[in-house]
Image (cartoon, rainbow, N blue to C red):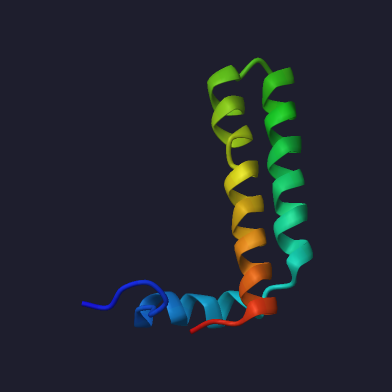
Length: 75
């Protein structure tokens, strides 16, 4: 079993595909999720607002990961 730095075919394929996505897409998508969340909160749809609002952090985290893969490369 491979440990550490070796990646599976699926991870490598995903990285190759997402490397083509501009970094701004992740930022604007996260801002969009926050805006939709605010709108839902104003509409008093509190549970849905919380659900959508929690998308921002994972989206930004995916953007950071994507940026690292672009700069540092993949295995």
